[in-house]
Image (cartoon, rainbow, N blue to C red; front, side, top):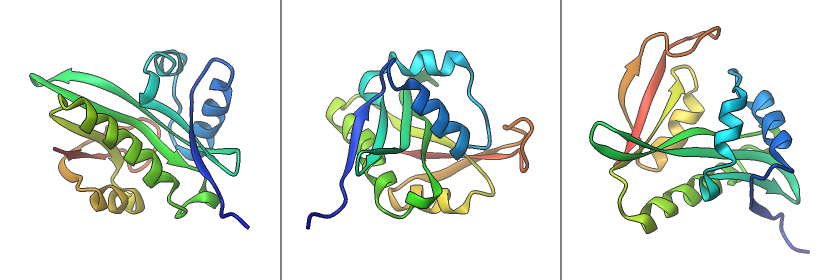
Length: 153
């Protein structure tokens, strides 16, 4: 018998509601309509993750030109709790890292993580991300409100 399959699929107008639902369940913050409209425009930088054909996670990124650099910003990367520790996050992050490597013009990749989310911090550290700063009151209406900025060059 074949093992379970993890596959990544495009985010399209037909499945954007699945992405919205996943994000509502996974993250303590809510994302507005502009976020989802923008996600439909980024192509390979947004993917739904499927485990045995069930949508269980997603990654959404954008290209950010700031500080005179071309940076990739991971807006969201998450997986439903029952499906964590099955290498789904690894598959999503590797997809993003491969895009950056093939492109060759990104200065770094960065993201924000709630300071209390130790499992996420540990996950990104395994891939060479480092905490470069902590932003006070980054999040609204959730505690703790502070976020670490993690970056990989």
